Image (tube, rainbow, N blue to C red; front, top):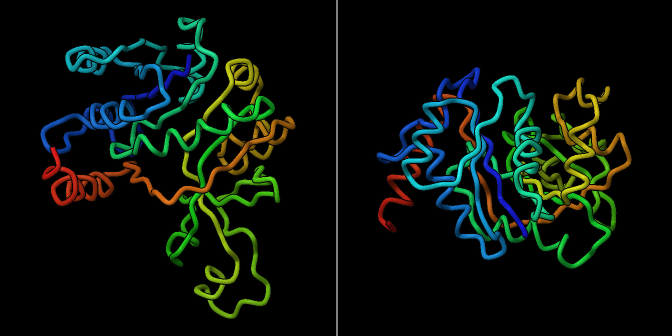
Length: 253
């Protein structure tokens, strides 16, 4: 069984109550859930929460929901807790709760490597960086990978460094930089193993948990997607999401 899990933490430091933020008359977490359910490969989609109010809202719109402790370190740790309640699931997909317009096709693209190759333990999505703003932003995580599409490193800094480029635009165009889209697919045993380890040195420095896997020798398959995602981390992001909904989503519902 393949299960999509949406971790939803109420106490976001930059946007309190983020899962319940209103977008077009619907809480953000419901948008994420509805779009995740459009995946053709997921057998079910569940939500992992840490707050009673969020739990009640999620129950009210009909999703399967699990309560997890507030003090859990990360969304991945919440998914590991949910995994204990779903012993028949062999693959788990970490779907970010703050990406209300995630496409089902993106989820399916990320899942496919684990279906076709039993040696792939973890997969994730990447997309070509096309602007200087994305290249320079530390909130846009960059990734470099080998000829077999396994990640070599993730960083908040622009990588690779294009030594011969004279301008930032030239760096973007000549360096073939890629950004990481934070949707992960784990085999059950890898998820449980990963969440049992302590934070590693590079993970602490960059504040990127995927580096814990690389430091322990777990390979991460990267899948190039043509689709982009819209993450909501700040009040400004929320306004952008609301405008996006009005212009591109509302008319189709």
